Image (cartoon, rainbow, N blue to C red; front, side, top):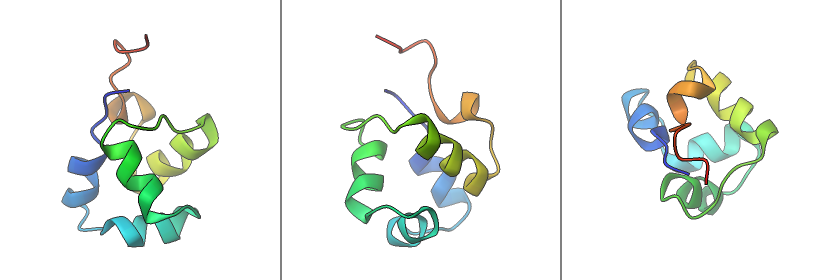
Length: 66
């Protein structure tokens, strides 16, 4: 699923490994989500949204739900 996580994470000046540690996943998971190779669970998406202080609708392109 298309997302804006990488851009928003960088704006907050958070490295992938820091983000991963903060939400309890591996850096590889963050990388896979950012590169649209893995769609996070709802629980993980909420954790990312809370960490980035952003609504889920801003993180993901909801028009790309195929």
